Every structure is written in C-alpha cells, then in structure tokens.
Length: 271
Image (cartoon, rainbow, N blue to C red):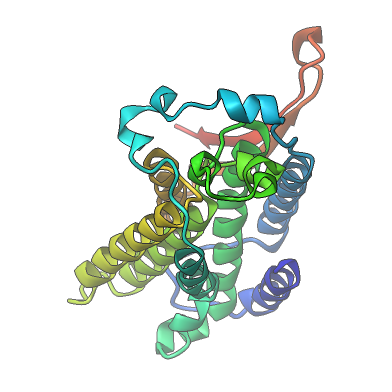
C-alpha cells in the first residue's frame, strides 16, 4: 500500500506542472513536505499499533459488557468473518478513488494534482487512525464473544477498536471523490447523488465492521467524521481562493520541560 501511495505521489508531482483549468493550487515542495511529515507520523502510529499489548486472562475476565456505553452495548459479542471479508471491497475501492476521475476530460488533465491531494487526504486520515488505535486501549466487540478462542480475544490487535480505520478510509475516499467532482462541476445534477453515495458507502462500511465484531457504533462514527473531514478539507484547503488557510504536520519535544512529546496537525488562518 505504501508503494501504491508513493507511486501516485511521484506521478502527481510529475504531472502537477501541467495542471490546467483546475480549481486547486498545489506546490511540489510544500505538498511534498506535508506528505513526508504525515507519513512520518503514520509510521510512528503504526509502531504503537504493532507494540499493542495483549490482554491478560485476568483482564479479560474483568471485562463486562454492562460497563460499555449503552449506545455501543448491543454490539458486544458480535463476530462475522463474512462481514469482515466483504468490508474489504469498499475499503480497497476507496483507495482507488482517483481512478474514477480518468473518464472526465478536466479531471484527466489534472489527474496528477488530484492524486497528490488524495495521498494527502489518506495520509491525514491515517494520522488520526494510527495514533488513536495505537495509543487508546479499547477492546473490540469480538473480545466479548465467549465462543471465540482465547488467543483471538486477548491478542493486541483486538484491543484497538477506536477509531474505525476501515470506516475512516471509506469516508475519506468517497467524500474526497464527491468534493473533487463538486469543485470541478459545481452545476452538475449528479453532485447531490455523489454526496449521498459517500454517506451511504460509509454507513455500509460501518455496518459491516460492527457486524464483524471489529468496532462499536461510536468507533465508526468517529472514523466517519475523521474520514469525511479529511476528504472535504484537504481539497478545500488547496482551492485557489483559500490561500490564507494552511494545514501541516507538527511536532513538539519536551514540552515546557515536562518530557512530553507531541505530534499531530496544525491548522492556521491568516487574517
């Protein structure tokens, strides 16, 4: 997947010089630095995920679904391998969203630029996903299913329910497609259907991930918000009339001598 994004980005930088009649403005150095920083934070987040500690049997026995928020409680114990497998269809489709613009003449002329924006969108979504999934300990719904093998329930990968990564990716890809089409063809009658489709596909993904026992409702809602926001804001921030708004990765080390290091995103607006 990293190789795919890298290829798309390099292709985007190559074609970016030839972008024409586009509502967006990109800069090779600026966008390149943003992606490099975002990828760096993603890598850090993935190390947190990989080092996620498994539950002990004692900790597993202490889990009680009655301690779960009522809005989420109904999903505790869910498990479906079929739903999990099906959820990868919209997941990979979302990752290939830039390809849907190739048939359009205006979009095809600016395919490289659109691809760069897409990589930024997914990298931004990845920051929120990897950092929350890596740093927040929350057992998946399947952990509450006593019919599953002990190893499946206590493994580290089963303790990163928040946020829903698949839902975030689906929302990011589909809302990005709707936003870009909207900006290239603001008067098209298809625009409302694309926005509706983005909501529908994201909701379907959330349903599948909940049925699979991977995430609770609130995990999916959070993933939806992160993905949709990234899919809309990244293109919006690159519009030619939005030069006063900027979004970039940021890192602070040993904040005020506390030994605390922080990494994330900063949003600035120049008046």
